[in-house]
Image 1 (cartoon, rainbow, N blue to C red):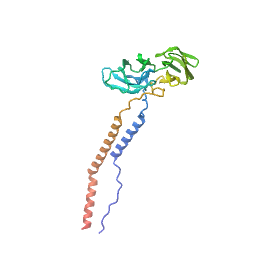
Image 2 (tube, rainbow, N blue to C red):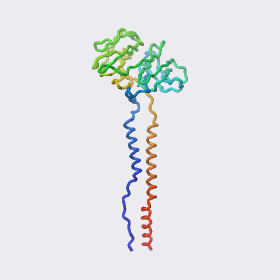
Image 3 (cartoon, helix red, strand yellow):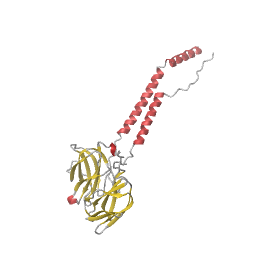
Length: 315
């Protein structure tokens, strides 16, 4: 007696499992497209969407003051929101996006415990949609924290420029931009107001009593800049800070000083949540597929017939 044979059939892939895996891939792809590289300054939203947050950056602009640790506190909250370690002269952090409200900035000696008394501190308020620079300025003997309002919109087609005088070796400087004089005999530890200038390529030049320095600048339309006068190892030097690029775009990035502060890294919880959700979807898909195979009456009946036929053939 011929033993009946069964024709091998291609089992279709479990649809729920495929769906789950596709969902996981889409979630991961979305995360990759929207992720900010580690260490990169976060892209701030347009001002029209900034209804509850502002921007803040921190700077050390006192030439003879030692390095410090900088702490940012929400008013009434003893836990620091932002901590920058070993911030030395000439360092300017990237902008941090923070909720609107009252804050305190404190500076402690580099390496000091967070519970140690601060060298100095100041309180201020962040308004929604606005940007600020909080800088330690002046000589070490008269160090103070100064809160500066950073403009985030420029006249259409023009550029805005201001100057921070942070050179102690040259107590007074004159700053020019092309043929325009931005400041004359500007005193140490003072800041000018923003001034409107024509967009285009130009040269910034600073002249002190015994030293001078220059820097090429490209001023795009609607951009906003802060030029910082610093003491370098070989005399005066200039740094160009981009306060904003485009009148409808909030501040992005940190200082072009070659030093720069470090923003805290974002926590990995969003990625962990995506991976966990994908794994859960895949597990559910496998469970449903197995359940469906077990509950299929037709498949069960066919298996039973094949078994009976095989037993009959053997006997």
